[in-house]
Image (cartoon, rainbow, N blue to C red; front, side, top):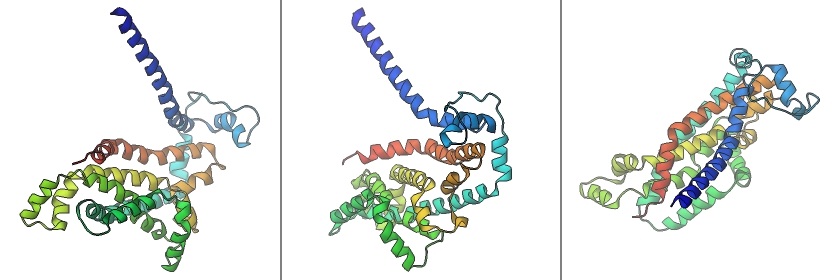
Length: 288
């Protein structure tokens, strides 16, 4: 009996060691940003400057700054007004997308999930096809539509394509599929119409799928690069994701601090939205 127990303990240690190494690989970029934002500029130039062609020698990295300083963050927050302008540009482009998806994608997902009409399956498969298409495929049609509507080079050129995206509709549909049909039949007997049923039953019970779709849409919109780069020529409308590449060549310390500040909202949203993501995935796998 001792031999199998010892073997199982060794297997657990081996699996734990492998998982620990994988966790280190995942956490290394975050540690890289945190320590880089606290490093003096001369130390940053000496460690990663050779990789950018700004110094001679070998690329290296210190686990901890030799002399921690808040100067890069203070310079970013106090002496870089362009950073705040683009930060609020990102906020003004991402959150209207989420509100629009809640108003447009949720009713569409409810209709695809709970209403029975001719062509429903074809329409659902069409949503799947549109969801799988990369931005490079839909870029030209979207550009032509926005040009016809005279919306190019305005924030609406980024907001409207996000509002009418097929991805949140698909995710919310899977979440609404988990709502028990007998409960809907009871609501119909009580005289509740489709809109009231969606508001009183669908959204409260399908909230995991709705919130998981909104969390994923936030992460996608917050980190978007290709869409604003294609549809926004005026830099006054650029989001924060396009600002980072512009300051990397100017000040490495400010670039590290800006990357860390930009990552903070995504980490917070994912941290508090992770339970709903898990519930949404579980709900998507439930069959009546």
